Image (cartoon, rainbow, N blue to C red; front, top):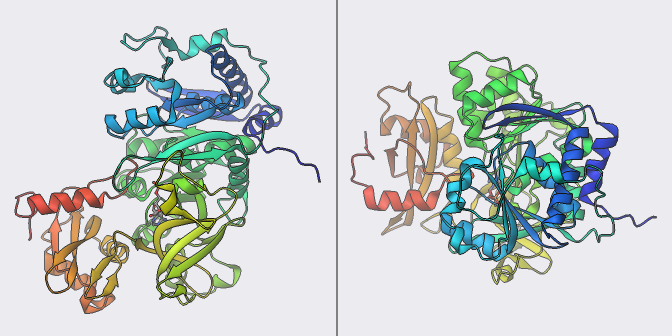
Length: 542
Ligand code: AMP
Protein backbone atom coordinates (compact mmCIF):
# COMPACT_ATOMS: atom_id res chain seq x y z
CA UNK A 1 0.00 0.00 0.00
CA UNK A 2 1.03 3.57 -0.47
CA UNK A 3 2.74 5.13 2.46
CA UNK A 4 0.95 8.47 2.31
CA UNK A 5 1.63 10.72 5.31
CA UNK A 6 -1.38 11.73 7.40
CA UNK A 7 -1.10 15.51 7.64
CA UNK A 8 -3.38 18.07 9.33
CA UNK A 9 -3.49 20.63 6.47
CA UNK A 10 -4.91 18.03 4.08
CA UNK A 11 -8.01 17.97 6.27
CA UNK A 12 -8.66 21.64 5.59
CA UNK A 13 -7.92 21.18 1.89
CA UNK A 14 -10.71 18.64 1.75
CA UNK A 15 -13.15 21.10 3.34
CA UNK A 16 -12.12 23.83 0.89
CA UNK A 17 -12.54 21.53 -2.08
CA UNK A 18 -15.73 19.66 -1.24
CA UNK A 19 -17.49 21.68 1.44
CA UNK A 20 -16.75 25.26 0.40
CA UNK A 21 -20.34 26.30 1.13
CA UNK A 22 -20.56 24.79 4.60
CA UNK A 23 -20.15 27.29 7.42
CA UNK A 24 -18.55 28.11 10.73
CA UNK A 25 -20.74 30.33 12.92
CA UNK A 26 -18.70 32.12 15.47
CA UNK A 27 -19.80 34.15 18.46
CA UNK A 28 -17.11 36.78 19.02
CA UNK A 29 -16.74 39.61 21.53
CA UNK A 30 -18.63 41.94 19.19
CA UNK A 31 -21.28 39.78 17.61
CA UNK A 32 -21.81 36.71 15.48
CA UNK A 33 -19.82 36.04 12.32
CA UNK A 34 -20.35 33.40 9.65
CA UNK A 35 -17.67 32.17 7.24
CA UNK A 36 -17.80 29.27 4.84
CA UNK A 37 -14.97 26.74 4.51
CA UNK A 38 -13.80 28.35 1.28
CA UNK A 39 -13.29 31.61 3.17
CA UNK A 40 -11.82 29.87 6.19
CA UNK A 41 -9.39 28.08 3.87
CA UNK A 42 -8.32 31.29 2.21
CA UNK A 43 -7.92 33.11 5.51
CA UNK A 44 -5.93 30.20 6.92
CA UNK A 45 -3.56 30.23 3.94
CA UNK A 46 -3.06 33.97 4.40
CA UNK A 47 -2.31 33.38 8.08
CA UNK A 48 0.18 30.57 7.35
CA UNK A 49 1.96 32.86 4.94
CA UNK A 50 1.93 35.73 7.45
CA UNK A 51 3.47 33.49 10.09
CA UNK A 52 6.18 32.48 7.66
CA UNK A 53 6.91 36.15 7.05
CA UNK A 54 7.13 36.67 10.81
CA UNK A 55 9.93 34.12 10.75
CA UNK A 56 8.15 31.05 12.17
CA UNK A 57 9.96 27.88 11.05
CA UNK A 58 9.05 24.20 10.94
CA UNK A 59 8.96 22.67 14.41
CA UNK A 60 8.70 26.01 16.22
CA UNK A 61 5.87 26.64 18.65
CA UNK A 62 3.10 29.21 18.24
CA UNK A 63 0.88 29.80 21.28
CA UNK A 64 -2.79 30.82 21.46
CA UNK A 65 -4.66 32.36 24.39
CA UNK A 66 -8.16 32.39 23.02
CA UNK A 67 -11.79 31.34 23.36
CA UNK A 68 -13.61 29.16 20.83
CA UNK A 69 -14.09 31.15 17.62
CA UNK A 70 -13.29 31.08 13.90
CA UNK A 71 -9.92 32.82 14.26
CA UNK A 72 -8.79 30.25 16.77
CA UNK A 73 -9.95 27.59 14.31
CA UNK A 74 -7.82 29.17 11.60
CA UNK A 75 -4.71 28.93 13.80
CA UNK A 76 -5.51 25.20 14.23
CA UNK A 77 -4.63 24.73 10.56
CA UNK A 78 -2.37 27.70 9.71
CA UNK A 79 0.28 26.72 12.27
CA UNK A 80 0.56 22.99 11.39
CA UNK A 81 0.09 24.05 7.73
CA UNK A 82 3.49 25.65 8.03
CA UNK A 83 4.98 22.62 9.77
CA UNK A 84 5.02 24.56 13.05
CA UNK A 85 3.39 23.46 16.32
CA UNK A 86 0.13 24.92 17.64
CA UNK A 87 0.31 25.37 21.41
CA UNK A 88 -3.13 26.10 22.82
CA UNK A 89 -2.79 27.68 26.26
CA UNK A 90 -5.36 27.34 29.01
CA UNK A 91 -6.48 30.92 29.66
CA UNK A 92 -7.74 30.05 33.12
CA UNK A 93 -4.38 29.01 34.52
CA UNK A 94 -2.61 31.19 37.09
CA UNK A 95 -0.30 33.75 35.41
CA UNK A 96 2.82 32.03 36.82
CA UNK A 97 1.73 28.75 35.20
CA UNK A 98 1.04 30.52 31.91
CA UNK A 99 4.52 32.05 31.87
CA UNK A 100 5.98 28.66 32.82
CA UNK A 101 4.37 26.88 29.89
CA UNK A 102 5.07 29.63 27.34
CA UNK A 103 8.73 29.44 28.38
CA UNK A 104 8.80 25.66 28.56
CA UNK A 105 7.27 25.35 25.09
CA UNK A 106 9.48 28.24 23.90
CA UNK A 107 6.59 29.86 22.05
CA UNK A 108 7.79 32.24 19.37
CA UNK A 109 4.50 33.98 18.57
CA UNK A 110 1.43 34.40 20.80
CA UNK A 111 -2.10 34.86 19.46
CA UNK A 112 -4.24 36.59 22.08
CA UNK A 113 -7.93 37.50 22.31
CA UNK A 114 -8.35 41.19 22.99
CA UNK A 115 -9.95 40.65 26.40
CA UNK A 116 -6.98 38.51 27.45
CA UNK A 117 -4.34 41.13 26.65
CA UNK A 118 -4.12 42.32 30.30
CA UNK A 119 -3.26 38.78 31.35
CA UNK A 120 -0.33 38.61 28.95
CA UNK A 121 0.70 42.21 29.70
CA UNK A 122 1.02 41.25 33.37
CA UNK A 123 3.67 38.62 32.54
CA UNK A 124 5.22 40.12 29.41
CA UNK A 125 8.64 40.62 31.02
CA UNK A 126 8.83 36.91 31.79
CA UNK A 127 8.42 35.73 28.19
CA UNK A 128 11.88 35.95 26.58
CA UNK A 129 11.16 33.52 23.72
CA UNK A 130 8.14 35.41 22.36
CA UNK A 131 9.09 37.57 19.36
CA UNK A 132 5.63 38.72 18.28
CA UNK A 133 2.13 39.11 19.73
CA UNK A 134 -0.99 39.02 17.57
CA UNK A 135 -4.30 40.33 18.86
CA UNK A 136 -7.49 38.65 17.68
CA UNK A 137 -10.17 41.32 17.57
CA UNK A 138 -13.17 42.41 15.53
CA UNK A 139 -12.18 46.05 15.88
CA UNK A 140 -10.42 47.89 13.04
CA UNK A 141 -7.77 49.48 15.22
CA UNK A 142 -5.07 47.89 17.32
CA UNK A 143 -6.04 48.17 20.98
CA UNK A 144 -3.64 50.11 23.14
CA UNK A 145 -1.23 47.75 24.81
CA UNK A 146 2.36 47.65 26.00
CA UNK A 147 3.03 44.34 24.21
CA UNK A 148 5.63 44.71 21.47
CA UNK A 149 5.60 44.07 18.61
CA UNK A 150 1.82 43.75 18.52
CA UNK A 151 0.10 42.80 15.25
CA UNK A 152 -3.55 43.03 14.26
CA UNK A 153 -4.85 39.59 13.19
CA UNK A 154 -6.99 40.85 10.32
CA UNK A 155 -4.23 43.17 9.05
CA UNK A 156 -1.77 40.28 9.07
CA UNK A 157 -4.24 38.33 6.95
CA UNK A 158 -4.57 41.21 4.50
CA UNK A 159 -0.83 40.99 3.81
CA UNK A 160 -0.84 37.19 3.51
CA UNK A 161 -1.09 35.20 0.28
CA UNK A 162 -4.56 33.57 -0.15
CA UNK A 163 -3.10 30.84 -2.36
CA UNK A 164 -0.21 29.97 -0.03
CA UNK A 165 0.63 26.25 -0.29
CA UNK A 166 0.64 24.28 2.95
CA UNK A 167 3.76 22.25 3.62
CA UNK A 168 3.56 18.70 2.22
CA UNK A 169 7.10 17.41 2.68
CA UNK A 170 6.57 16.51 6.28
CA UNK A 171 6.88 13.37 8.36
CA UNK A 172 3.42 12.41 9.67
CA UNK A 173 5.04 11.85 13.06
CA UNK A 174 6.17 15.47 13.20
CA UNK A 175 4.55 17.53 15.96
CA UNK A 176 1.45 19.55 14.99
CA UNK A 177 0.06 20.59 18.34
CA UNK A 178 0.61 20.68 22.06
CA UNK A 179 -1.40 21.15 25.24
CA UNK A 180 -0.35 21.33 28.86
CA UNK A 181 -2.30 19.46 31.48
CA UNK A 182 -2.41 20.49 35.13
CA UNK A 183 -0.52 18.30 37.56
CA UNK A 184 -1.68 17.67 41.14
CA UNK A 185 1.53 19.26 42.33
CA UNK A 186 4.14 21.23 40.43
CA UNK A 187 4.01 22.77 36.99
CA UNK A 188 1.69 21.69 34.15
CA UNK A 189 2.94 18.87 31.90
CA UNK A 190 3.18 19.21 28.12
CA UNK A 191 1.69 16.72 25.65
CA UNK A 192 2.73 16.91 21.99
CA UNK A 193 0.32 15.68 19.28
CA UNK A 194 1.66 14.47 15.95
CA UNK A 195 -0.07 15.07 12.60
CA UNK A 196 -0.68 11.34 12.39
CA UNK A 197 -2.31 11.19 15.84
CA UNK A 198 -4.64 14.11 15.07
CA UNK A 199 -5.76 12.62 11.76
CA UNK A 200 -6.35 9.14 13.20
CA UNK A 201 -8.15 10.56 16.24
CA UNK A 202 -10.37 12.61 13.93
CA UNK A 203 -11.24 9.45 12.04
CA UNK A 204 -12.24 7.81 15.33
CA UNK A 205 -14.61 10.72 16.07
CA UNK A 206 -16.41 9.94 12.83
CA UNK A 207 -17.03 6.24 13.50
CA UNK A 208 -20.70 5.32 13.69
CA UNK A 209 -20.34 3.68 17.11
CA UNK A 210 -18.24 6.51 18.44
CA UNK A 211 -19.24 10.22 18.25
CA UNK A 212 -20.46 9.57 14.66
CA UNK A 213 -19.53 13.09 13.63
CA UNK A 214 -20.51 13.67 10.02
CA UNK A 215 -21.20 16.25 7.34
CA UNK A 216 -24.87 16.22 8.39
CA UNK A 217 -24.05 17.53 11.83
CA UNK A 218 -24.00 21.00 13.28
CA UNK A 219 -21.32 20.62 15.94
CA UNK A 220 -20.77 22.93 18.86
CA UNK A 221 -17.61 22.35 20.90
CA UNK A 222 -18.38 24.04 24.20
CA UNK A 223 -15.29 22.38 25.61
CA UNK A 224 -12.53 24.99 25.22
CA UNK A 225 -10.19 24.82 22.26
CA UNK A 226 -7.34 24.84 24.82
CA UNK A 227 -8.65 21.70 26.55
CA UNK A 228 -7.22 18.78 24.55
CA UNK A 229 -8.02 20.61 21.28
CA UNK A 230 -11.71 20.86 22.15
CA UNK A 231 -11.59 17.05 22.16
CA UNK A 232 -10.40 17.10 18.56
CA UNK A 233 -13.81 18.20 17.28
CA UNK A 234 -12.63 21.26 15.29
CA UNK A 235 -10.13 19.11 13.36
CA UNK A 236 -12.60 16.34 12.58
CA UNK A 237 -15.47 18.74 11.79
CA UNK A 238 -13.37 20.58 9.22
CA UNK A 239 -12.28 17.32 7.62
CA UNK A 240 -15.86 16.04 7.37
CA UNK A 241 -17.34 19.37 6.24
CA UNK A 242 -19.44 19.59 9.39
CA UNK A 243 -21.06 22.94 10.20
CA UNK A 244 -19.51 24.34 13.37
CA UNK A 245 -20.86 26.70 15.99
CA UNK A 246 -18.25 28.35 18.17
CA UNK A 247 -19.65 29.71 21.45
CA UNK A 248 -17.02 32.46 21.90
CA UNK A 249 -16.04 34.33 25.07
CA UNK A 250 -17.71 34.38 28.50
CA UNK A 251 -20.69 32.29 27.48
CA UNK A 252 -23.49 31.54 29.93
CA UNK A 253 -25.95 28.62 29.98
CA UNK A 254 -28.45 30.98 28.35
CA UNK A 255 -26.05 31.79 25.51
CA UNK A 256 -25.41 28.08 24.99
CA UNK A 257 -29.14 27.28 24.98
CA UNK A 258 -29.87 30.16 22.59
CA UNK A 259 -27.11 29.09 20.20
CA UNK A 260 -28.19 25.46 20.27
CA UNK A 261 -31.74 26.44 19.42
CA UNK A 262 -31.05 29.17 16.84
CA UNK A 263 -28.27 27.32 14.96
CA UNK A 264 -30.04 23.96 15.20
CA UNK A 265 -27.04 22.29 16.78
CA UNK A 266 -27.09 18.50 16.47
CA UNK A 267 -24.09 17.63 18.65
CA UNK A 268 -22.55 19.64 21.48
CA UNK A 269 -19.60 18.62 23.62
CA UNK A 270 -18.54 19.68 27.09
CA UNK A 271 -17.87 18.77 30.72
CA UNK A 272 -20.71 17.88 33.15
CA UNK A 273 -20.72 21.33 34.80
CA UNK A 274 -21.69 22.85 31.44
CA UNK A 275 -24.58 20.44 31.11
CA UNK A 276 -25.72 20.91 34.71
CA UNK A 277 -25.88 24.63 33.92
CA UNK A 278 -27.82 24.00 30.71
CA UNK A 279 -30.25 21.72 32.52
CA UNK A 280 -31.04 24.50 34.98
CA UNK A 281 -31.50 26.92 32.07
CA UNK A 282 -33.86 24.54 30.28
CA UNK A 283 -35.90 24.18 33.48
CA UNK A 284 -36.32 27.94 33.68
CA UNK A 285 -36.69 29.00 30.06
CA UNK A 286 -38.28 27.71 26.91
CA UNK A 287 -35.96 26.51 24.16
CA UNK A 288 -36.42 24.34 21.10
CA UNK A 289 -33.84 21.57 21.50
CA UNK A 290 -35.41 19.30 18.89
CA UNK A 291 -32.37 19.48 16.57
CA UNK A 292 -30.01 17.95 19.16
CA UNK A 293 -29.26 14.30 18.42
CA UNK A 294 -26.61 13.90 21.12
CA UNK A 295 -24.70 15.68 23.82
CA UNK A 296 -21.17 14.42 24.28
CA UNK A 297 -20.11 14.65 27.89
CA UNK A 298 -16.70 13.86 29.37
CA UNK A 299 -13.88 15.28 31.43
CA UNK A 300 -15.41 14.03 34.66
CA UNK A 301 -18.15 11.55 35.50
CA UNK A 302 -21.60 12.37 34.12
CA UNK A 303 -24.07 11.76 36.98
CA UNK A 304 -26.77 9.26 36.08
CA UNK A 305 -29.46 11.68 37.31
CA UNK A 306 -28.29 14.24 34.78
CA UNK A 307 -28.33 11.75 31.91
CA UNK A 308 -31.85 10.74 32.91
CA UNK A 309 -33.03 14.36 33.09
CA UNK A 310 -31.72 15.19 29.63
CA UNK A 311 -33.15 12.09 28.06
CA UNK A 312 -36.51 11.71 29.72
CA UNK A 313 -37.46 15.36 30.27
CA UNK A 314 -35.87 16.98 27.23
CA UNK A 315 -35.54 14.00 24.87
CA UNK A 316 -31.88 14.83 24.30
CA UNK A 317 -29.72 11.72 23.90
CA UNK A 318 -26.66 11.84 26.10
CA UNK A 319 -23.32 10.16 25.33
CA UNK A 320 -20.81 9.69 28.11
CA UNK A 321 -17.15 9.58 27.10
CA UNK A 322 -13.77 9.42 28.78
CA UNK A 323 -10.33 10.64 27.84
CA UNK A 324 -7.33 12.66 28.91
CA UNK A 325 -5.15 15.39 27.45
CA UNK A 326 -2.57 12.60 27.05
CA UNK A 327 -5.00 10.57 24.88
CA UNK A 328 -6.03 13.22 22.30
CA UNK A 329 -8.51 12.72 24.20
CA UNK A 330 -11.21 10.26 23.03
CA UNK A 331 -10.56 6.64 24.10
CA UNK A 332 -13.71 5.37 25.79
CA UNK A 333 -17.31 6.04 24.86
CA UNK A 334 -20.58 4.68 26.14
CA UNK A 335 -23.01 3.14 23.66
CA UNK A 336 -25.33 0.20 24.12
CA UNK A 337 -24.48 -2.92 22.14
CA UNK A 338 -27.29 -4.17 19.92
CA UNK A 339 -28.32 -6.92 22.35
CA UNK A 340 -28.21 -4.55 25.34
CA UNK A 341 -31.11 -2.53 23.94
CA UNK A 342 -33.48 -5.11 25.39
CA UNK A 343 -33.13 -4.35 29.11
CA UNK A 344 -35.39 -2.04 31.11
CA UNK A 345 -34.85 1.68 30.81
CA UNK A 346 -33.09 1.71 34.19
CA UNK A 347 -30.76 -1.15 33.16
CA UNK A 348 -29.90 0.64 29.95
CA UNK A 349 -29.23 3.83 31.85
CA UNK A 350 -26.97 1.98 34.29
CA UNK A 351 -24.83 0.78 31.40
CA UNK A 352 -24.70 4.15 29.68
CA UNK A 353 -23.82 6.02 32.87
CA UNK A 354 -20.57 4.05 32.87
CA UNK A 355 -17.77 5.55 30.78
CA UNK A 356 -18.14 2.82 28.14
CA UNK A 357 -15.90 0.71 25.97
CA UNK A 358 -12.72 1.39 24.05
CA UNK A 359 -13.01 3.06 20.68
CA UNK A 360 -11.44 1.00 17.88
CA UNK A 361 -7.71 1.56 17.59
CA UNK A 362 -6.91 1.80 21.30
CA UNK A 363 -5.86 -1.00 23.66
CA UNK A 364 -6.13 -1.25 27.44
CA UNK A 365 -4.96 -3.22 30.46
CA UNK A 366 -6.35 -2.86 33.96
CA UNK A 367 -3.85 -3.67 36.67
CA UNK A 368 -4.93 -4.41 40.25
CA UNK A 369 -3.04 -5.63 43.32
CA UNK A 370 -2.46 -9.07 41.78
CA UNK A 371 -2.01 -8.29 38.10
CA UNK A 372 -4.78 -7.86 35.54
CA UNK A 373 -8.22 -7.59 37.16
CA UNK A 374 -11.13 -9.92 36.46
CA UNK A 375 -13.83 -8.50 34.18
CA UNK A 376 -16.49 -8.81 36.87
CA UNK A 377 -17.46 -5.18 37.42
CA UNK A 378 -16.08 -5.46 40.95
CA UNK A 379 -12.32 -5.74 41.06
CA UNK A 380 -10.62 -2.36 40.81
CA UNK A 381 -7.38 -1.56 39.06
CA UNK A 382 -5.50 1.22 37.30
CA UNK A 383 -6.35 1.78 33.64
CA UNK A 384 -3.38 1.52 31.25
CA UNK A 385 -3.73 2.61 27.62
CA UNK A 386 -1.81 2.41 24.36
CA UNK A 387 -2.58 3.37 20.81
CA UNK A 388 -1.70 5.64 17.90
CA UNK A 389 -3.24 8.76 19.47
CA UNK A 390 -1.91 8.17 22.99
CA UNK A 391 1.15 10.21 24.04
CA UNK A 392 4.31 8.33 24.93
CA UNK A 393 5.97 11.06 26.98
CA UNK A 394 5.59 14.48 28.55
CA UNK A 395 7.43 17.17 26.64
CA UNK A 396 10.91 17.59 28.16
CA UNK A 397 9.71 16.51 31.59
CA UNK A 398 11.18 14.01 34.03
CA UNK A 399 7.65 13.09 35.20
CA UNK A 400 7.49 11.02 31.98
CA UNK A 401 9.16 8.13 33.82
CA UNK A 402 6.35 7.61 36.33
CA UNK A 403 3.46 7.81 33.84
CA UNK A 404 4.77 6.11 30.68
CA UNK A 405 6.15 2.63 31.32
CA UNK A 406 6.71 -0.44 29.13
CA UNK A 407 4.84 1.10 26.20
CA UNK A 408 1.74 1.94 28.28
CA UNK A 409 0.24 5.16 29.61
CA UNK A 410 -0.58 4.78 33.31
CA UNK A 411 -3.73 6.91 33.51
CA UNK A 412 -3.94 7.22 37.31
CA UNK A 413 -7.65 6.36 36.96
CA UNK A 414 -9.01 3.47 38.97
CA UNK A 415 -11.65 1.47 37.09
CA UNK A 416 -13.71 -1.68 37.09
CA UNK A 417 -14.47 -3.61 33.90
CA UNK A 418 -17.64 -5.66 33.50
CA UNK A 419 -18.17 -8.90 31.55
CA UNK A 420 -18.85 -6.86 28.40
CA UNK A 421 -15.57 -4.98 28.66
CA UNK A 422 -17.37 -1.81 29.74
CA UNK A 423 -15.27 0.47 31.89
CA UNK A 424 -16.45 2.35 34.91
CA UNK A 425 -14.17 5.00 36.37
CA UNK A 426 -14.21 4.48 40.11
CA UNK A 427 -11.93 7.37 41.01
CA UNK A 428 -8.60 9.01 40.50
CA UNK A 429 -6.04 6.95 42.43
CA UNK A 430 -5.51 9.96 44.68
CA UNK A 431 -9.23 10.62 45.32
CA UNK A 432 -10.26 7.12 46.43
CA UNK A 433 -11.25 7.10 50.08
CA UNK A 434 -9.52 4.43 52.12
CA UNK A 435 -11.70 3.44 55.07
CA UNK A 436 -10.48 0.64 57.35
CA UNK A 437 -8.42 -0.90 54.55
CA UNK A 438 -11.32 -0.89 52.06
CA UNK A 439 -11.86 1.53 49.18
CA UNK A 440 -14.83 3.86 48.86
CA UNK A 441 -15.47 5.51 45.50
CA UNK A 442 -16.05 9.25 45.85
CA UNK A 443 -17.45 9.25 42.31
CA UNK A 444 -20.19 6.72 43.15
CA UNK A 445 -21.29 8.74 46.16
CA UNK A 446 -21.23 11.98 44.14
CA UNK A 447 -23.35 10.49 41.40
CA UNK A 448 -25.89 9.23 43.91
CA UNK A 449 -26.01 12.60 45.65
CA UNK A 450 -26.49 14.45 42.38
CA UNK A 451 -29.52 12.28 41.65
CA UNK A 452 -31.26 13.86 44.69
CA UNK A 453 -33.95 16.22 43.43
CA UNK A 454 -32.78 19.12 45.63
CA UNK A 455 -29.05 18.83 44.99
CA UNK A 456 -27.43 20.91 42.27
CA UNK A 457 -23.90 19.52 42.64
CA UNK A 458 -21.93 17.45 45.11
CA UNK A 459 -18.35 16.42 45.76
CA UNK A 460 -17.12 13.82 48.22
CA UNK A 461 -13.67 13.98 49.79
CA UNK A 462 -11.77 11.98 52.39
CA UNK A 463 -11.55 13.30 55.94
CA UNK A 464 -8.65 11.98 58.03
CA UNK A 465 -9.95 9.62 60.73
CA UNK A 466 -8.13 8.15 63.72
CA UNK A 467 -9.70 4.72 63.63
CA UNK A 468 -10.53 4.23 59.95
CA UNK A 469 -7.72 6.30 58.38
CA UNK A 470 -10.17 8.14 56.14
CA UNK A 471 -13.92 8.69 56.06
CA UNK A 472 -16.10 10.25 53.34
CA UNK A 473 -17.41 13.78 53.74
CA UNK A 474 -20.13 14.99 51.38
CA UNK A 475 -20.05 18.60 50.19
CA UNK A 476 -23.36 19.61 48.72
CA UNK A 477 -24.69 22.61 46.79
CA UNK A 478 -28.49 22.77 46.95
CA UNK A 479 -30.69 23.96 44.10
CA UNK A 480 -32.13 27.42 44.58
CA UNK A 481 -35.59 25.88 44.80
CA UNK A 482 -34.62 23.53 47.66
CA UNK A 483 -36.29 24.11 51.01
CA UNK A 484 -35.36 22.79 54.45
CA UNK A 485 -33.16 19.97 53.25
CA UNK A 486 -31.16 18.60 56.16
CA UNK A 487 -28.09 16.42 56.51
CA UNK A 488 -30.31 13.57 57.70
CA UNK A 489 -32.56 13.84 54.64
CA UNK A 490 -29.53 13.43 52.46
CA UNK A 491 -28.10 10.50 54.40
CA UNK A 492 -31.51 8.82 54.36
CA UNK A 493 -31.57 9.24 50.59
CA UNK A 494 -28.20 7.49 50.28
CA UNK A 495 -28.84 4.76 52.85
CA UNK A 496 -30.71 2.26 50.63
CA UNK A 497 -28.11 2.59 47.88
CA UNK A 498 -24.86 1.85 49.75
CA UNK A 499 -23.29 -0.38 52.36
CA UNK A 500 -23.46 1.29 55.77
CA UNK A 501 -19.73 1.96 55.94
CA UNK A 502 -19.85 3.88 52.63
CA UNK A 503 -22.22 6.51 54.02
CA UNK A 504 -20.56 9.92 54.52
CA UNK A 505 -19.77 10.79 58.14
CA UNK A 506 -20.96 14.31 57.54
CA UNK A 507 -22.68 16.52 55.00
CA UNK A 508 -21.70 20.16 54.60
CA UNK A 509 -23.64 22.68 52.56
CA UNK A 510 -21.65 24.97 50.29
CA UNK A 511 -22.49 27.83 47.96
CA UNK A 512 -20.38 26.25 45.24
CA UNK A 513 -17.80 23.53 44.68
CA UNK A 514 -14.39 24.91 43.67
CA UNK A 515 -13.58 23.95 40.07
CA UNK A 516 -10.45 23.51 38.02
CA UNK A 517 -9.69 25.70 35.04
CA UNK A 518 -11.60 23.27 32.84
CA UNK A 519 -14.67 22.98 35.06
CA UNK A 520 -13.90 19.84 37.06
CA UNK A 521 -14.24 19.60 40.83
CA UNK A 522 -11.03 20.85 42.40
CA UNK A 523 -10.82 18.47 45.31
CA UNK A 524 -7.46 19.76 46.46
CA UNK A 525 -8.92 23.25 46.98
CA UNK A 526 -12.02 21.75 48.55
CA UNK A 527 -9.91 19.82 51.09
CA UNK A 528 -7.92 22.99 51.93
CA UNK A 529 -11.13 24.98 52.25
CA UNK A 530 -12.61 22.36 54.55
CA UNK A 531 -9.51 22.21 56.69
CA UNK A 532 -9.32 25.97 57.19
CA UNK A 533 -12.97 26.82 57.29
CA UNK A 534 -14.74 23.78 58.67
CA UNK A 535 -16.26 25.84 61.45
CA UNK A 536 -16.78 28.91 59.28
CA UNK A 537 -20.30 30.16 58.68
CA UNK A 538 -20.03 29.49 54.93
CA UNK A 539 -20.10 25.79 55.75
CA UNK A 540 -23.24 25.08 57.67
CA UNK A 541 -24.33 21.74 59.00
CA UNK A 542 -28.08 21.92 58.85
P1 AMP B 1 -7.86 16.17 31.36
O1 AMP B 1 -6.53 15.80 30.87
O2 AMP B 1 -7.89 17.52 31.99
O3 AMP B 1 -8.91 16.01 30.33
O4 AMP B 1 -8.23 15.18 32.55
C1 AMP B 1 -8.28 13.79 32.34
C2 AMP B 1 -8.90 13.13 33.54
O5 AMP B 1 -10.26 13.51 33.66
C3 AMP B 1 -8.93 11.63 33.44
O6 AMP B 1 -7.69 11.06 33.82
C4 AMP B 1 -10.06 11.28 34.41
O7 AMP B 1 -9.60 11.29 35.76
C5 AMP B 1 -11.01 12.43 34.24
N1 AMP B 1 -12.11 12.06 33.31
C6 AMP B 1 -12.21 12.33 32.01
N2 AMP B 1 -13.38 11.88 31.51
C7 AMP B 1 -14.04 11.30 32.54
C8 AMP B 1 -15.30 10.64 32.68
N3 AMP B 1 -16.15 10.50 31.68
N4 AMP B 1 -15.62 10.15 33.90
C9 AMP B 1 -14.79 10.30 34.95
N5 AMP B 1 -13.59 10.92 34.88
C10 AMP B 1 -13.22 11.41 33.69
